[in-house]
Length: 365
Image (cartoon, rainbow, N blue to C red; front, top):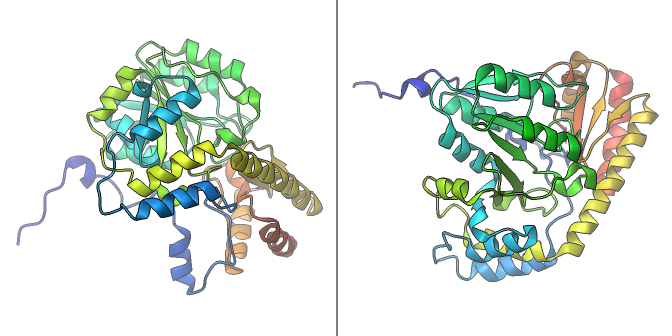
């Protein structure tokens, strides 16, 4: 029998996935996780209004979803004071990243990002044959000057920036972001990933401006809205960019239940405020937990905190020791950021369990 013929790009790719899922870890150990705080999911649930809307939508799940997500697009446009034609909705930011890479990256094209930043973006660049140009962090923050310089050096037409950052939780302020955007070449598109923007201080948020064709602002319902499993993300950009995305996106990718939940959650602003407040309290708890063990945290504007345990070797031991006791956390992959373990803000009960086990693990490693 003849072997299957794959594209040269796929033939050259290793069999990798961006993340090892907690479910796979549970299958490996044969035990359920005691505390699941590594995937930056929200532990505070979803809006009661969203829950009711999703339950009602289940009754019509036999029907195809609205491929335009029209009601949600109109509501998002109103929220951001833009036109519905400047809103693109898809199955999470991960899906949107792949679509944008497909729009702009030919095989061999350079694409600029931070070294150790969100790996799913790299996954898509590699999958379409792009060439990653990665710039090290500067003091645990994305190096805006370094990213800009690499764009200039390589002639890249696409650059990725998460603000607030994943995996470090750090952020740049509005003035720095504006200066970075202004200095980008006219033919370079910025993916501005704002997945964690609901948790960020006001100074980290720039005003929506869809007149600049070079900027794509990506947001999600996976974090503060607590709908990670529903897979709803959106992009705010110039209508020309949204129209180009419409040429290639999966028009039925966001199901009816997810659309209904996202629309209802968007309207429940008091619930989102409560989640943000609880996350802020949790970040403060992690600072105390770290200090009690003689450690420090990296300042965070997200729903997770990086705890600096000294070096990558020790961080890996701590991560594994926590997993051996059924506590799931992750850590940045690239030195020197790999000196940290990264823990999602859990419920007060989960934070208490984590604190007890973390103290024991740190003392033993």
